[in-house]
Image (cartoon, rainbow, N blue to C red; front, side, top):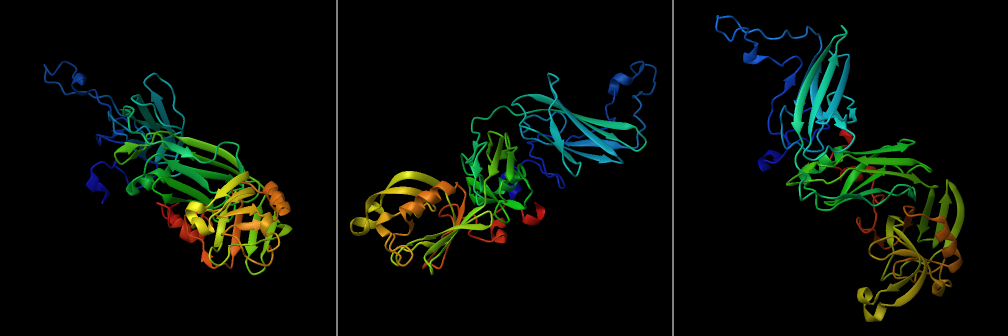
Length: 412
């Protein structure tokens, strides 16, 4: 159970954007400020009753639930959570102690408000929630709190892709963390990660490992899609640490280039934007070192490289060879590459050590067509692709992929 750790931030049911570290549960409600003992007109010396300022006679009410009033050590990623009643309009304002206004976004359920970025370490802020009723009158609630000091053990958050990248239609969005994220906190992290695409496509995040999470759409990205993803993770508590930074990336999907290899025909079909543009003879892995059947992604491209397999294959099978037009498909060493030595077998016989061999002419042409993230599906070989051996995000159904999310697909 999460509560057994004693470090889990309080989470209120119905609030989807809250990650505050709280030290109290005091809520400030509209019009709840009292003059207290100072309201006595004569210090009580004449037996008079205390007199408090009149509360505004408003139909709407507002209450801030998180962060609590006067809370200290609040997470820099905190959202402002609140309740309103009889409100036809709700507004949230957040200001620093120096009077600077913090920008943010109101959640669709109008129960929380999230700053556009992490708050400053050690800074004091005042949140004001205003609720206006259909009578035109407005009730307000305030909560002043202080953000925690900058921790020394923050976890870095990074993206494999950077702004301006143009990638293939199979490219997953890849986010990495400097240390493992405890499983109980992965849903908190995921709720702070948002992907928007033009045109829009359904998709999901999936935890590939404790330090890596990917996003893929249900189907291959549509050609020329603009993709933006944002992580509002700076200061977010994850177990005994916090995440160090926010992150935003803007990129573009290129043309729809898809490669399909059929072991039966020993041919690769290259399709671009739905049209077959070339059929290429191939030689796949021989029976003792078969190519993998499955859907892979071009991970990296090297115009020239050297394959040295003596350590992997031993002195009898190993070799050291200069390679042209190499495109990596798996971490285990499967590539598409030019192989002039097997051109006589390409289209008829499998003689490689697991790679997709093509001619020098076809290798050069294909290298000029592809991008990182372009998908290739190999069919009919003796070995199935092992998930995790490369970017295997498309080597499973979308339903299977979604099971690796920390948030059920129905709740995303």
